[in-house]
Image (tube, rainbow, N blue to C red; front, side, top):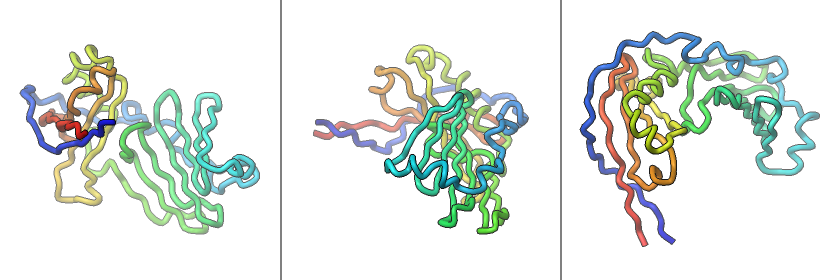
Length: 218
């Protein structure tokens, strides 16, 4: 069976680097006013009575309820809105009291969006990490820009999934805010070398695209 090895050799692609129009980050566009970003009273404590019988089955339990997907595991609760694809992860202390809340885009290579909140044992917020710091372009706007740049490929290869990562200015404050996005589509697209698109996190300008060459090793 062949194993895929990713050779991190960057091959620049000749795509015009024309600047995009400036975007203004709004709650409506970026969905930051979506209810998924609210921390509900019932989420402040891990409900043993509700989840113990489920957890006794062991492993990660996934339940599909109405418009939400619930992922339940010890001291962790994941809630995904099937329509918006936004996910909230709530982690709990051993005391079952809330420890942290963070937000993601489903299947986005674990890229935080919005803010992350850390709590002490009393349920008080002790730290807030703002992942939007230094960015005028939010995740939704970055995808919107890419859809215009890669319009032909998206149609040709039935692209339906976008994977995002970005430079975290909390960790690298001197770096340039930048989104990196790759896509997933039909089988034909999966056989191609993986293509990464870079978009300026302040102006929305398309910076460049490059490929990560896939090598097959017997």
